Length: 204
Image (cartoon, rainbow, N blue to C red; front, top):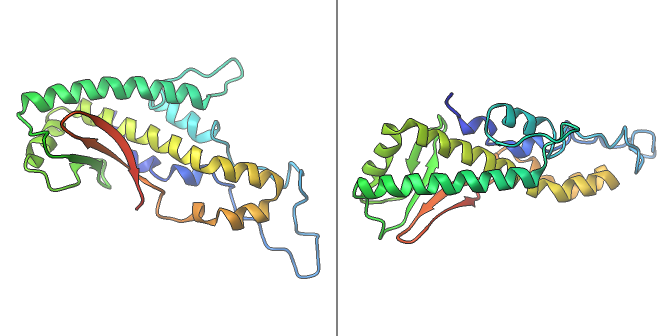
């Protein structure tokens, strides 16, 4: 199965309420949800909700739900760390075998179709991209790591919003309105240097 991480690149959208709260009519409190009203404050999903289950079913998260069927964020983090360590070792070996110059930093990302590309100007750009073309399982691993890391990043960014929303939906939407932007949130990238390889996020 090919994992196309753009399908979950907007993970933050799944961690928001299903709709923005509607503004109250002037002079009326009838349309304003009451604080602590569970029906008014109901969220579409939580960071351990529908999207996590979907990603896990796709084999991206690599975790087992607990007895109640819940998927815990910390278990996802631990599984991602293990997968990332394995990916780092494989890629390091293939870069060495291909004679890639690591004295200059290379940055990896995926395009809209999920293809792994070198995002910056590197002298061995063609060699690096060829590694992923010739090893589709490695490209699949990269897309999976990207999707899971993006999900965790979205969950971390949404956590304060969820807490505020439970207390006052209207104030929360006003305070965290940037989370509703359609740009999809920060973009996952992968940095390769002489001595290290690491994931990071950049604003779009």
